Image 1 (tube, rainbow, N blue to C red):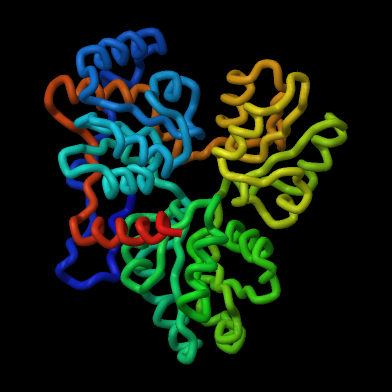
Image 2 (cartoon, rainbow, N blue to C red):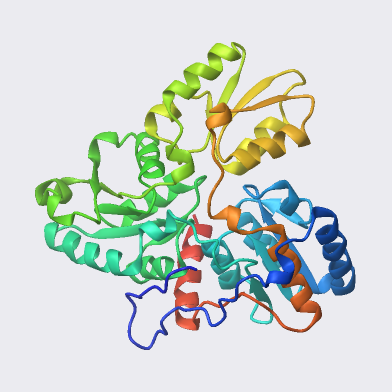
Amino acid sequence: MPELKSTSLETDLSLFKYDDLERLPPRYRDLTEAERTERIDAAREALGEDVVILGHNYQRREIVEHADFVGDSYGLSERAAAADAEYVVFCGVTFMAESADVITDDDQTVILPSMEASCPMAGMAEALQVDDAWAELTAAAPESEIVPVTYMNSYADLKAFCAEQGGLVCTSSNAHEAFEYALDRGDTVLFLPDKHLGENTAHRLGMADEVVEWDPWDPAGADAEAVADASIVLWDGYCQVHERFAVDHVAAVRDRHPDANVIVHPECRREVVEAADVVGSTATIRETVAAADPGETWAIGTEIHLANHLDRWHPAVNVVPLCGDACMDCNAMRQVDPNYLTWVLEGLLEDEPRNVIAVADREAELASLAIDRMLEL
């Protein structure tokens, strides 16, 4: 279950919590693929346009084949906001469903099939830690104006915190623009929670020598003078899937496929990004493979399910996972079992919405402001 999170906002902002943390009932646990497919299809037909199903790129085949839209986290939230559906079933992780709740209409209800699907990287920047870090950082650099920027892969309360402190949200595609926004308004960027995306963005801006890392688990180990002198402070968080990729994987795939093109996500380590041919978001990875010539080989440096999807979707292209059999799936996405999808859809048939994601009003208002600032870039 996702942990309850404190908030840095004023006391009139409700503590963000979930009222319903139901687990999958036993009668749903042993469904075969054929059984659940039949039941999902029947529920979809009965619900009609009252429901839209969103499937993240990192979900397994048995999920994405039932989705109305497949894409990245923020793109899917935009799809939900544009839909007329009363119910949005987001087959992703907690922060994605929160973002969808923030930007959809008040009369739309967002459902996360499994409340166990909580992103480990988002959990590396909890509000209590950020509150403590903010106090430490502002004390270490009292003459500096620090502007926080959070990656979309963060909880709603962190997005709200950034808005309250004059900052904003970014995606992996526009992080460089968000950094520029912050530096136009202050002296220092605090970037959370993904240090690898932050480092790669600093290199893109030619600011690699102006970076210092902040360890929220050991703030006493930080050099106050270095923090005061830095233009970019990177929170020590990371994606467990993308951090696993290594330059040895790039070398090995080039040995196996001398003509391979290597494309990786910017959440990968800096040395992996430098060794790749192309770096980009999941949308960029999808677009690149879709535009590839027949017979080309593309090694994919991101979550294994997207590599598998691309291999199915583009049979004329030779798609291989960058780290071969060593590639791993996202253990948070894995929690959205197709049986959970069956359960929540049948709950809607019974007029019993399950696992509803509802961000507190004030928190949602501020998180929306952080997103709006991004959209204005």
